[in-house]
Structures are given as C-alpha cells and as structure tokens.
Image 1 (cartoon, rainbow, N blue to C red):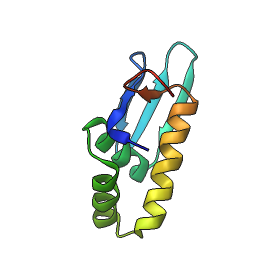
Image 2 (image 1 turned 135 degrees about the vertical axis):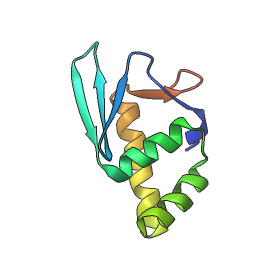
Image 3 (image 1 turned 90 degrees about the vertical axis):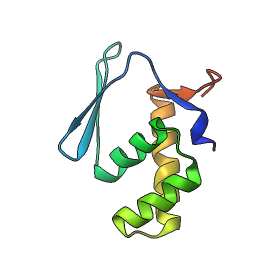
Image 4 (image 1 turned 45 degrees about the horizontal axis):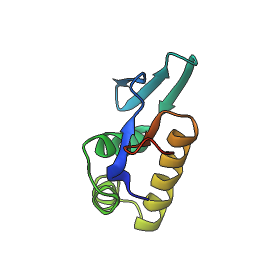
Length: 93
C-alpha cells in the first residue's frame, strides 16, 4: 500500500467535529464518522505522509503497538477506497 498516492474524492466533504472527523459523500448521501485515531490517520494521509511515518507518529501519539496501528491503517484505507471516498492518484482503486 502506498498511502502517498491516495487522494480524496473531489465531492467528499470532510469536517472535524471535536477530535473526530465526519465525512459526507453528497452524491450518494453516505455519511461516515471517523474516531480520533482514524481522524489522525486520515489527516496524515491528506498531508502526504508515508505509511511508515503514519504508523510511527500514531504510535507515539496514542501509545499503541506498531502492528495494530498498521493493521488499522490498512483497514481504514481499504474502507475509504471501497466506498469511493478516496482513490489512488492514478484514478485506480
């Protein structure tokens, strides 16, 4: 997985609510809420951080095990890609 090649669907609306993130896909009417860790991962993906950087930083911020963070990052990215909320910069999912 290369998170640096991900980009947000141009119609996606994202708004931080406290420590969490709300994502709305207006075309489908789908609404998603990211918890505090997923929100931080999402922000780091948008900032262009690498998978390694994300796992390392999240581990520091949330005092969690690297393997668990990595697994959660993969699940988040897979979920966002499946729902069409993100895509690879080449337009592939």
